Image (cartoon, rainbow, N blue to C red):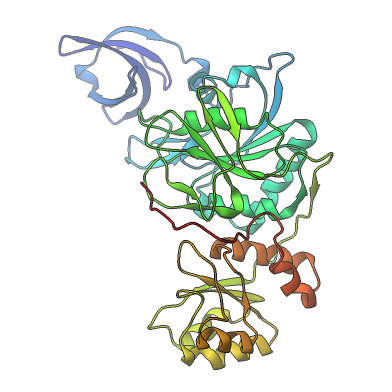
Length: 412
């Protein structure tokens, strides 16, 4: 049998049935082949009857340049890794990040209509990204916006809201849309949401929008992409393709049938992009629970500049923590209160517990989502005087604070 190079196209016969596909990898004596219908097929070498072999195409060669069609809308795509740029490792069965722009070019139906400037970082799963990486992504985003009209960031979904929110606060103004796109299913799976999400993100990059957003599936079907404001977004399901929700309001827009529709109030493009790229990472987030003791609280706030408490209901903790909270604030650490509830707002004036926390100096953050409060604290502490912290942390900078929130209806 002729040597089959990874990425080669194949026509082959197995048990008297003809198939077509791409040779993904060789594991021992077993060929792992992606069939033309999108499914994966592993077959022992001795059982593989080759009909024809084709050299690797542009779609299977990592690092292939994107075509540059003249006069098309210019967009920058930054690849950070994540499932949207992943495939199955057929040796281990795990999903691993890959960089394969040719594969994206061939699979995303509208990408040939854009002048794409591709910038691929070393691929990282999103749980491995930290605030220093957020700053690096922000700087690459500014470079992209200085050259192009919009920027798309390919990112893992697990911490996408954190990174996107960090960019929301760091960018004081945006000369074009910044759209994060991810996927719940790797790009080599027939059920992958990667390509429709990227298709929608490309179309969103053309509109008069000056915000950081997320483009993900709107439902279980492959017919609509929803645009979420980064600072009101949350991943609500581990595996569903429509995992993300806009909490406490409506999404900014939708993409369906090759058309974009924007809704509600949104910031439009500015004349220039202004970036404040500093973050203070010494922040803690604490989920209050009935077994949490004062010593636990004190251990988690040690050495921190600020702490976000996820309290119960309207923003409560047990009274046994009061002395520790008081000492923490006296030592100069900012203490804020958010809620564990998905919807609604913190209100420390309704119950005696809340009023006592207010008297200790705890800062209530209304309906701000806890993870967004964490990221915003990093930005405020790094860029404004400490004595003005409460002023800026409670200011509605990017639409992160909403009122009169509707009741959350669930993920379905």
